[in-house]
Image 1 (cartoon, rainbow, N blue to C red):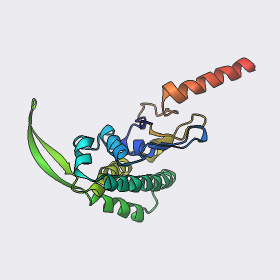
Image 2 (cartoon, rainbow, N blue to C red):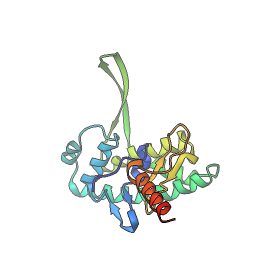
Image 3 (cartoon, helix red, strand yellow):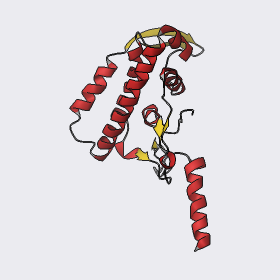
Image 4 (cartoon, rainbow, N blue to C red):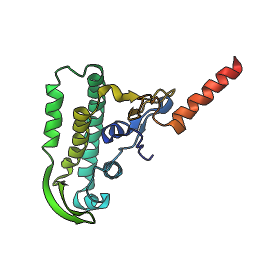
Length: 195
């Protein structure tokens, strides 16, 4: 199954790479190739997935995918805790993220664009395990820039997806209005018809 990009933030989309609609577990990061495709789809990978498939051995990529799945479950538990108590001491989780951030190297580069000359930051993936650094960067950006009250679980029946509520009134209830939102409307309509 293709990964879902409904969370309005790459870190939330990372959590949504495993979900359980109506209790059926779906894993979208089953191997290294799937991880590379997700990173590219999330905008966290500089270069095409095939470039990294040629650079790193399949077993290295599969090992990083297995580590990514463990990171995802750890992040899900920690972000749940952070949402409930944002002012608690999170030294240990931050240290874990900082260790992952150290796997990445970056440099600044001048490029010429239609608007003129621009200074951009390039992230270098020197080893397969450095593929987790962009995920750690996304999680770090989430916790340092977003309001924990706006990270929500979908209100859809049987849905386990999360999202960041970026709506103006902060009243978003569903991961997708066209999926879970419509199902809720249909269920409410049927309930009214029965009543």
